[in-house]
Amino acid sequence: MTSAATTASSPAFRTIDLRGHALGLAELRAAVPRLTAGDGASVEEAVRGIISQVRGSGFSALTALAAKFDSVRQRHPRVPAEAISGALAGLDPEVRAALEESIARARSFAAAQVPADVTVHPAQGASVTQRWVPVGRVGLYVPGGLAVYPSSVVMNVVPAQAAGVASIALASPPQKDNDGLPHPTILAAAALLGIDEVYAIGGAQAIVTFAYGIPAAHDDAGELPAIAPVDVVTGPGNIFVATAKRLVKGVVGIDAEAGPTEIAILADAGARPEFVAADLISQAEHDPRAGSVLVTDSPELADRVREQLAVLAARTKHRDRVVEALSGEQSGVVLVDTLDAGIAVCDAYAAEHLEIMTADAPAIAARIRNAGAIFVGDYSPVSLGDYCAGSNHVLPTSGTAAFSSGLNVTTFLRAIQIIDYSEPALSGVARHIRSLSDAEDLPAHGDAVEVRFADALRLSGPPAL
Ligand SMILES: NC(=O)c1ccc[n+]([C@@H]2O[C@H](COP(=O)([O-])OP(=O)(O)OC[C@H]3O[C@@H](n4cnc5c(N)ncnc54)[C@H](O)[C@@H]3O)[C@@H](O)[C@H]2O)c1
Ligand SMILES: N[C@H](CO)Cc1c[nH]c[nH+]1
Ligand SMILES: [Zn+2]
Image (cartoon, rainbow, N blue to C red; front, top):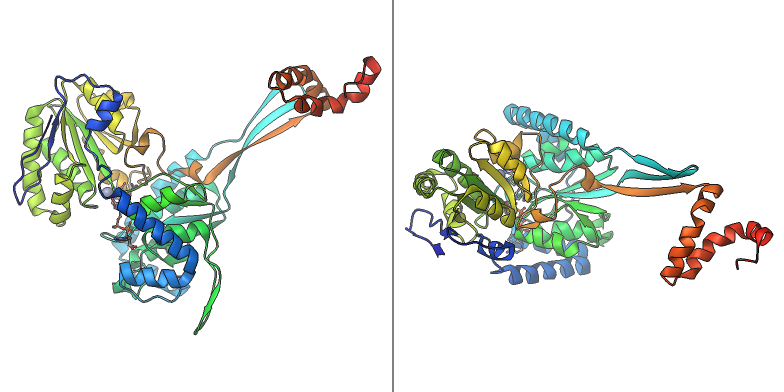
């Protein structure tokens, strides 16, 4: 079912041929290209080590980890206010204009997502309300290892602000080329959005810091101010970041596992191979662990895409990691008999990003059930969503799109239910509460209602209690 042709300079981009096979969901999930456990266990062990190091040793652990992974000397990770404002002052005007456009589009979509409170009246004098309330404090992670992600500042901060979160902290890896501070474009994006609590912390240690906080400490030079824990941690990152988020989930809320990027493209014979190949490469350049998958019913298209991949990969800037990503077990072409079979493969894969390049792409897109985001037609590439569509680029990976959503305003909200019944309204339903509490053998529940009507019951019959 699987084959791959490798040359040293061009991506192997394996083929998974599902033609002639009628596979169920579990078999499809096992067949689609995905990073298997592989180094997962060792990554988890490393991240568990970082969690106990940061929880046990606080700031001195952060200093040691910044030296180890980011090659910087750091005493306290808080970025000074003047570094943030200075970064904005030094921002390239073209980049500033692009960030402002990205912010404006993201804001209009986020504002429209704010859900309304709802109230219903099940009976006279009875009301139940669902009220949306923002969490108090959030920690937003912005990656900065192999690439720099000011766009992720926008994608994290805009929905948090639209939700009304009062306290927003942001972390991004220290850069040795910027005096151990996060990249200046990241600081400038934070300044544009009015964020002043920024930490130079990368990887798993940033997630742990947000989840547990770091208590104040002292060193020879004086006080090291505390970092307060947050209620929710969001943001994309590499496998160490995604694993840390998974491990602290429960201590804090998280958005989703937004780990190494994935793109799947469902395409038919009419698709443009150069568009398909360019889009597969655009996401492969994020990380050697990125996944690029073509699902098609056209072996001819698959051949032409493979040719284009070889041409484009050879001349793209980050060709080493592109070739590694395209050649990995997480990438490849899945051949299917029909587009219906292709839809089933895409639903089983549950891609972070799914592009539809088929005839009547909107109709095919409407049938997809599992994806972080769906990009419809030739002129909605993932790069558009990464920067300027108005949608959010922080999206679930590794198949988690089957049960989780991309970052949005509700990530930062909780729905609190409010119950308000008058005495007559409670009386009107008391008989049913008694029946159900007895049926569950929890009679004190029924008693707690009847005690409120004890006088009335005494007047009309034997005492209820
Ligand atoms: N799913 C999404 O929504 C989404 C969006 C944007 C980016 N991404 C992904 O974010 C990732 C960015 O990765 P990156 O590496 O460029 O930046 P990053 O900030 O995620 O990771 C850099 C940090 O990783 C840590 N690290 C590196 N090697 C380590 C090791 N051996 N052990 C422990 N920690 C280690 C270091 O602390 C370093 O600061 C890419 O995988 C990209 O695909 C995902
Ligand atoms: N494709 C990434 C994951 O959605 C987001 C991104 C940021 N910058 C470029 N791309
Ligand atoms: Zn991208």
